[in-house]
Length: 144
Image (cartoon, rainbow, N blue to C red; front, side, top):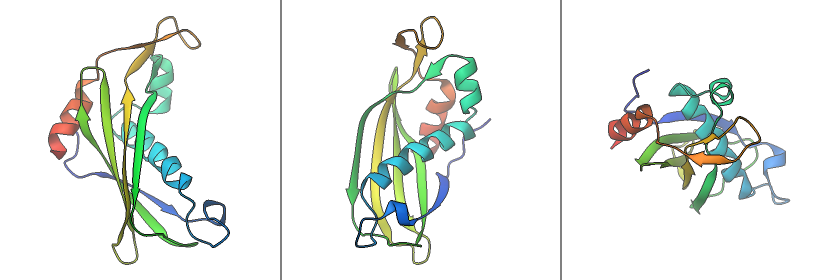
C-alpha cells in the first residue's frame, strides 16, 4: 500500500468521561488519542492488529510528549492529524496535531517514539528490536 503524503486523520468527540469537573478536556485524553491514532495510522499502512499479532510484532512506546494550546470542551469534535515524522534503524516517531473541527483551532500537538519489535519466540517471550519496515520509511519521506 503506497503511503499518502497527507497525514492520517482520526476524528474524536470530547465525551463527558474525557473531561475534568470543569467540563474541559482532561490532559491524559490526548495521550489515549495519540495511541489510538497511531494504531489507526499503522493499520492504514498495512499493519493492523491482526497482522501485528500474526507476525508477533509490537511497537512499545519509549517516549511521549504533548504541548497544550487550547482546551476543547464537552461535545467538541477534534481531528487528530497523524503522520510518521522520523524513522531510525529500529525506532520511529509519530507526530500528532489536534484540531477543533468547528473552527480549525489547533488545540495541542504531540509525538510518540516507538520501537519496532518482534517477540523472540511468540507472544509472551522477550521482545527484540528489529528494522523498521520500509513502508514506514516511505511514509516518513512522503510527509517530509
